[in-house]
Length: 362
Image 1 (cartoon, rainbow, N blue to C red):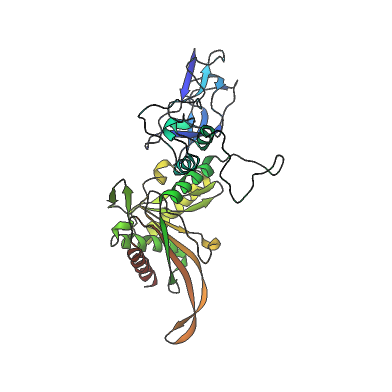
Image 2: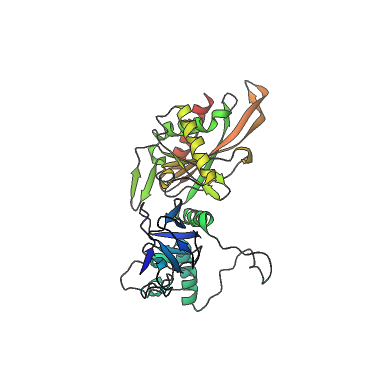
C-alpha cells in the first residue's frame, strides 16, 4: 500500500508553495507525524509532518520548486514505482480558450516587446502561470532584453538559485515596483527630546494616530475601489539572516508604549529565530521601517504592496541647526513617506509626514 502526499491547502488564500527543504530522502523509513518537509509560502515557512508511516519511495518535487496546492510531493510506502497519476508538477498545460492569462507585469511587458500573444502561449509555471521562458520560447528563442550587466560566462563566478525568502522578496518587490507609481516625500525631524530607546514604539504610535486623520494612507486599492481600513495594524520591517520580513504589530493606535515595545521585541526575536507564524505576518495596513545603526541619511523604501504607504526613519545624529537665531547642535534625522500616488495626493502625504514629526518632537 502506498500513500500519495499532496501539497495541502495552507490557508490564507495561498494557491502555491515552495519546497524549501526535504527532511527525508528516498529510501528513508519515516514514522507518522515525523517532520517530512518544509514548505515556504509568501507568509512564512511551515514544517509539515508525515501523514503516514512507511518508506519514502519517491520524491517528485525538488527543493526550490514552486508548485500549486494539490501537487503530489512524495509517495510513502509501496515498491517505489510511484502512482500512475503522480505527474511532474512542471508539465506544460495547453492554453484554455477564454481562461484568464496569469502572468506578472514583467512577463507581460516582455511579451509586448516581443510581440507575443499571451493567450496563445502554453504556461509551464505553477498554478498555470506564464513565465518569462514561456514567452521567449513562443517568440522563437528571442534573446533576453539587454541589461546593464552581461551574464556570467561558463566557469565565471558562483550561481545560486533564487529561492525561499529571497525569491519571495524578489517577486514581492518586483510587483511593487511595476504596479505602484510611488513618490517619496522627505522632511527633517528634531529627535533631541525623543527617548531613542523608545523610538520605534513612539514612531508606531505617532504614525497610527495620524493615520486616523489621513485615512487614505491606511487603505488599499482593489480594482476601481479604495478600501479604507478601520484598524491600525502596522508592519515593522526586520532584517534577518534569511532576508527581510515584515511582522505586524496590532492595534498601534490604542496600545501603550510599553505594550508596543513588548510586541516589537517578541516579534523581532521570532523573526531572528525563524519561528514567526503566518498570523504574525499578515494583515498589515501600513509599514514602518528603520535600519537603526545601518540607516543612511536618506533611502526610498518601496511600498509594501498592497498597502499604499511606508514610513522610513533614517540616520539620527548631531547636526548644526539654527534655533532662535543661533547655531546649535541638535539630534536630527530624516523621516520619509513613500506613497502610492494613485491613492494619495502629494500634499496629503506631506501633511501626514509633518503631523507625525510634530508628534515625535513634542
